[in-house]
Image 1 (cartoon, rainbow, N blue to C red):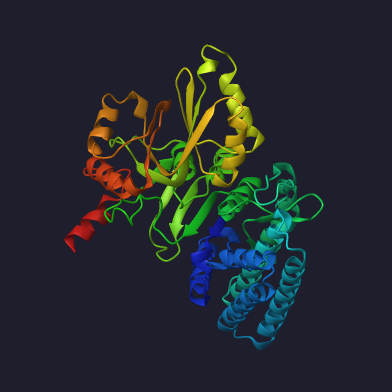
Image 2: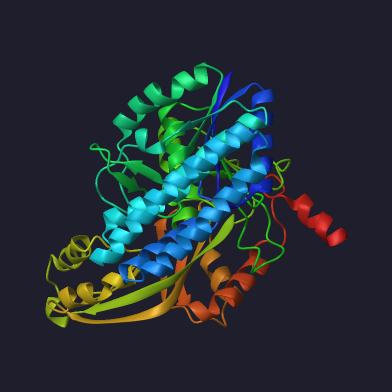
Length: 472
């Protein structure tokens, strides 16, 4: 039997009904002869509420922090009661939930006393979401005919000590998967573990950053040489753009690793940017599927996608960006100018999305607004600096964009009524990007989608779904 890693997002485990659907999907894989390893997120919105509790405690609002924890405690207890009918199993699970929340409350009380929310404490607090959901779901599986076995992800996902965005350590993860997970699979059990969380070499809890549960699934899939990595969410796969902006957006049936990575990085929220990396290294297909519509075939992400007649496959949007303009006339004809600029961004560990340069000026875009004052202060020592917020990046991903004559003219003709601040074309064969005002995003995306997705290639896009919608 072949091993498949199945990652379920927060909306796929948000309540007892969703967890029951998830159990049915996993049971279907078992019945089909697959050997699943399941990775789950925290229940929907739980991570946000844990962060709110941490924030309240760090401001000295102990009562508010404990009130949030109390509501979460009740939600998990009620969900457990709705999932488990076996009295003894329910009592055992609820006692465990009580102990976990008692421990969380102690952390919040301590934080309210010291009034300093360090990255290490933040990781510990938010880790409770996945720790609780994974243990509860493993027990729910067992009652629904799936031989679930809970695995603490912190014993498997080994990272460095860069709290809140820890870097996984591939070698130790492979060894831990072989030690902790493979024996359970060999025994016919379905391991269930939380995503997003890990621990460093000394066992201190870390996290992989928001949305990191996808990354966990890919790390486990890569470490165990899985047949496939399945990302289960609440949409039918990767879409040509956000359906909330364009209701006629199409499902993309198949896409390449490279194209999916570009989309994920530049704002497509259906996939965490780092998810693709472990899959690429082992050439493992990634499937994006809908837990609310499991019959849909979703999107298949593979090394080399079939040729697409349409010029673009997707339009992604990344909002809340800032343009930084750096101008230094005295640096004319001086080598090392760009290096001195990027050394400053490296010092502040701030990634840059787009760069546009002339002889003496450089424009860059970033999304780390909390670091802007310090970055601007350092840049001001070598140049004049100004920055503007509330910008958005539109990224158009497709096949061999650089080699298509006149494609830029078509793009900018479609959105000629929108002011473009920065353009990047030619840096990548599969990506054309430009920066606009946030307030213009919806108008620009609708215009571009209307222009480029009127006659989509049925080999790549789910044209049948659009035709069925029109017929209705």
